Figure 1 (cartoon, rainbow, N blue to C red):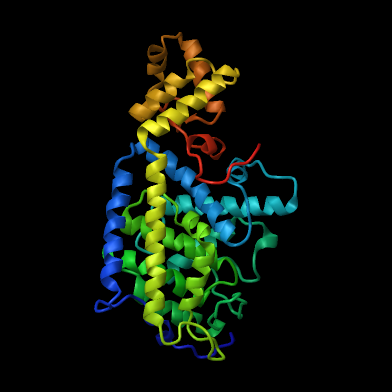
Figure 2: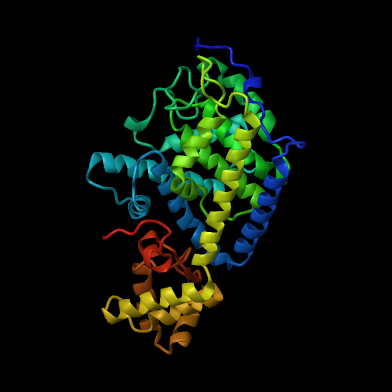
Amino acid sequence: MPFDLGESPASMEPTLIPEGSRHRAALVDLAIELVARASGLRSGLQPSLRLALAALIRTVDCHGSHLIEGRDLHPIDIERALHGDLGDDAGQRGLQLEARAHVEVQAWLDAGGLAGRAATAAGLQELHRRLGAHRPAEALQAEAPGALRSRDVEAGPHAAASAGAVPRLLARFERAYAGLGRADAILATAAAHHRLLWIRPFAGGNGRVARLMSHAMLLESLDTGGTWSLSRGLARGAAEYRRLLSACDPPRRDGTEGHGARPEEALAELTAFFLRTCLDQVETMEGLLRPEDLRGRVLQWAAEEARTGRLPERAGAVLEALLHRGELARGEVPVLLGQTDRNARRIVGALAAAGAVEATGPREPLRLALPAALAARWMPGLFPDRRR
């Protein structure tokens, strides 16, 4: 029988910033700005570029989530893991396998895998189960993936609920956060994030589950298209993120620390931090995706690769057409380049080998790819550079 200290669901209150709160107006203003900026970013992208960007953001998100947990696995190594290229070191290989699971689960979320269920107990258990399904056996906790924990866990500086309280606290969590309207769901993301971390329903992986849940909630409430990364922003502000989470904790079991007499203020501060972090990440992507600036960086890279013989001379023209049109039928390439079919195939093959273009099948249209290996040149500053 799991140990139960009798924590009441009332200890989670407030679960939302109430309507009459003096903090709510400022938070609503931030949320309105975020809705406008996020919508503008998404709608300004061609569908094919949006798909490529979402794939890159999954790697960026995974990198940020790892950083928060003190594990620096570079995005290039994450991307290599997706292609089965694992390191020789056992520790590195284990991190890559965990990262691959994270990216695959986020792809499932981006495809609507948890639509309408991100804040439900069943949805969270499925998310955790999928995260653990492909992880190395040595990385798994005693409980099976997706199973609620049956023992107490260490939670670092944070208070954590006793294991026996988890089912009733999760039931309250679902009543509070599932089925909210769009505006309330945006404001509730930070609160749900903290309350889930306090409940800690699983023996391990709660941080990753909370960040992926928040990604799913924002994906639905903001229709983000997965075009920017909350976890990148949280990692960049990790010290403040941890401080604000701790400030929202209920009093510890010995009656010390936690949010004490300021639960609403602490939750409002965390909510404002989340919304500003989201806005900062949207602004970052807006800057990196300005059409003329992105075009200039991509074509400069192509010209440099051509000078060193790593790409054919006319390769840049294919990239420029893809940036302008979004997709390019393979039969159009010889005409675009003024080349024979054979030479056009050679140029496309060189671009595909460099990771710069992709297609869903051998006869499908070409589209621009955004691999981590090229992001340092095409989208500088998105994540740390690294010599290969």
